[in-house]
Image (cartoon, rainbow, N blue to C red; front, side, top):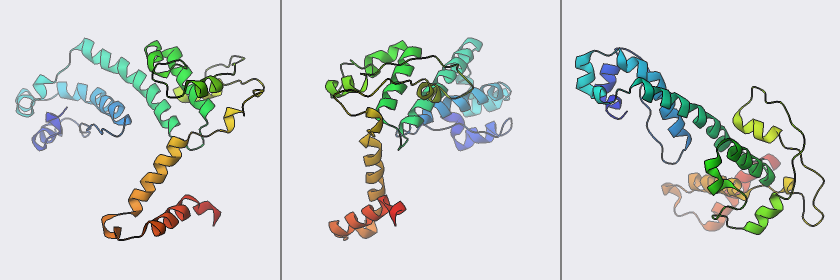
Length: 215
């Protein structure tokens, strides 16, 4: 989709449709889903292009066959589900036990993810902590409604009583989201024009920003 995104390509594409191709954002996984969404919308439009325009902007080499277009449509359905999980993982109120539920729900639908998301995956940094989080059983079945893939995972949670040894993990928040947002706010404050700012001043501003609801 790179060539139709150029100035010349946009001019040719503008004759048959308004939307233009999307670009990939390396720091946003959702951009992959958006690219395929736009591609799925543009496929019928590319077939309506004049032959000369298609050759001019290079779209003739990007034409997908009917079977390839079906593969893109099916892949897009899976990406929409997984994108809802990535969005849910960015929530500040998400607990560690809910993160585990999201991973387990993803594994149940996509077994290939077990290598990376299972509770005994080889890439785990703290296996003991993972055992504590997964030390609870689910009970009961709830009918799946018209909700997102991530919401289905969170609604299916039915935890038993609290652990006898460890604190209920529902009260433990994942620190990564909170810390990443704190660092992002610090970066926005500590601009090039404020490089002479003292560390103590920056710390005070970040503290006030992070606790703005308390004053």
